[in-house]
Image (cartoon, rainbow, N blue to C red; front, side, top):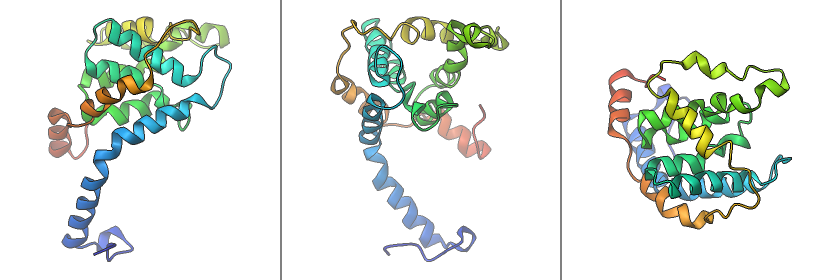
Length: 196
């Protein structure tokens, strides 16, 4: 079989879906390569900052690595703005969705809401609410998101900072994306969709 037999998913057979599942399994191992390519694309795009979006991401991951954070958080820091080019108004959610099957719920939550938490540093200058993050006051990971933005996001626009190159992080990306988080798989299997 080269392609499925249906033109409407409702008409698919068991064989069709087994074939598609096999194709997906063949496609998945290259995810780290596609992510690295996506990061490279951050070197172009909108500007105005003192560094490229790629350099910002490298500074974020480098700072997290040098601070001794877990490999999961280092990779999350590297990828936290990967959605900037395709989802500029919802980049946090896009990055979190990419990470979700491979990281803890805590790391997923931090990345999902980092854009809102990051507003603390600038929203009041452009007519926004810098304290919008306070809707999550009392959340178990509120302070973790505050710390992520303070230590690995808002301070990562320094053209003098010596970041590790993208190639330094590639083995980490490969390791983090080599195994799905079983707790998330169980949620999806049990609920049909995982909750946010």
